[in-house]
Length: 210
Image (cartoon, rainbow, N blue to C red; front, top):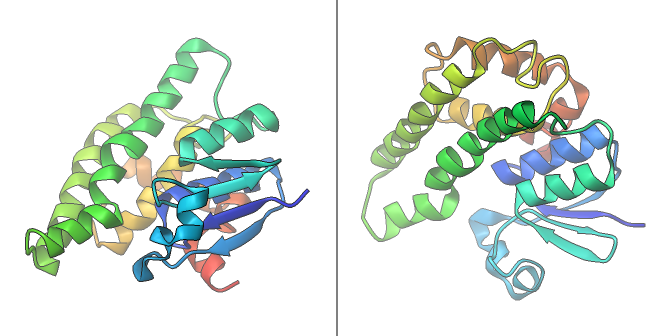
């Protein structure tokens, strides 16, 4: 069975799915779509992904979209290691942390929003970068509090869905030169996760350089 991931090396949502596939030990073929060139809006990709986004995972005859939905599919199909706990309280905490990134931080800062700020509102690059840093900072303030008392990872002794969402967002925060000093727990957890090969192999630098 051939598994294909249609993604972009610097897409946060695609980065999450690459981590998830690596953690599950699932081999896949990567198909790069250059978002800055608008490849995601071309007919072939719209046929795969009606929203015109990445990632899309082609697996077992299905075209799966939306990163958290893809990760949920992987968790149901490849049970080990689990991305969420069966314990209801632990599961709820994991989902809250993951959604703080995927629903509250990321949507405000994805490419189409930044393009709109530029093309429709005339925001210069400095203003767009300030926008980006502001919303990441706002989200990290709450996530840092939620992460207090974590073990080595947000998931404790083993990474979970929250960790999968954290690492790409930390990458973007650094790329936009956000001061991470106020977020020592997030910095510590991210550093520990970067030592794990499934996370390191999914990084934009590794993916871009083959």
